[in-house]
Image (cartoon, rainbow, N blue to C red; front, side, top):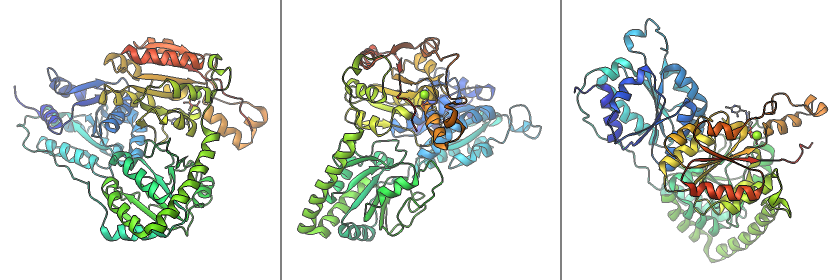
Length: 558
Ligand SMILES: Cc1ncc(C[n+]2csc(CCOP(=O)(O)OP(=O)(O)O)c2C)c(N)n1
Ligand SMILES: [Mg+2]
């Protein structure tokens, strides 16, 4: 049989090390679906809506450390994917998103389903291109993957017109190109940073997902302990960068400018590492970063370095590679006396962090274990007990989550997959991708009930491919977060205690029947005891399971 563009596309992906494609096909993708017949080197995971495909690829890329591949259908398919693609952009997830387009001879005639796909995807990706000739196809795919994986990592897009996929061509001729970035920062910059750090009396570290990507957690712990700094997670943190249970860890930074500034003002030196320091929920009324405080930043992501504040010492390099040099220089700069001062400071920091966690760590109150309708803290405390050690945790918990949830699960979960972009509906599909990448690890996702409904079709894909994660719906029958925020406006919702379009009542959502309708086992958990036993059973069943957890939140206050 002749080789055509679609075979070449598949062969190129395989040669680039790809094993999974998340997609949803249409007529323009039929040459690809045909090329997949009898092709056991590639697993095509069918997703019944495009947002699910992107979310799953995102989880897959995150958990595998490689690139996630998505194949979509023309403009409507890409359109459905755009909201979730926004999250991938904000998280810097390396994805190659492809979509079939109508054949080029039909473009001038604007035939049905045609549009300028590369233009549609453009604002959310690092590179967007329509492959116009089969001669360019292999190298376009290779370039796209290289670009996605090069820091700052992120999604890229290729439009694949039908005529290109069906043109006759030869075999692949190239090979993968990767840009190694395991290099330490420049020696002179390390020296400058060490001097600033050595002179600081109250240094503070803000760590982010770049630490996870660099696998530099151990090095960061060593550094934080050496200088006795308080450690915060970046706002909207989507991965573990520092152990939540470490005595110097003080929670994630808030996403509001004033509270953030208040925290940062405590420090006389700020050290940002692998983090996007400013992800705010609202336009800032003050600059969240104190203007005069010296700043050191260590990152491979040149876009995030000094993005909206000045940096006094830039460490452009890989965190894992840079820390050993930095630690050596800081030790020298501090000397005996400086090191012991740092240890005194560390003891103070630990006390302050302990006081914070005493207020924030979720505790089960007497009698709550069997109470129907779980309080937020009882729900979190039950999870802390029930999660098996080594669980990969996908977090879209919204009002049932936050620092309390992170504290609850921190000691049990080496891997956290959270959201950066704020577009809800990522939890359910992300867990699909994490499970596909890590079949032997227990995977648990907590999702808000409202969030789950954006991508509920994920359940069918879980059943179809037996992706045996456990999805816990934190069911409070509402968009609770919107209610909390609308009360803050202090207008009519507050005066009349009425909420427009924020409740799932009349009718309620029946998550059990919804999940069962897609082939997934579903059980309800009314109390913390129920949650513990159902989670246990679900994880040992070897089948994908949904747990509908009844959350009975304390009354809304203001
Ligand atoms: C795609 C998208 N649509 C709408 C929103 C606005 N939004 C933010 S949070 C939220 C409600 C979340 O509800 P749920 O998942 O039930 O969590 P809860 O607040 O109840 O804990 C909505 C609708 C959004 N962020 N993204
Ligand atoms: Mg809700």
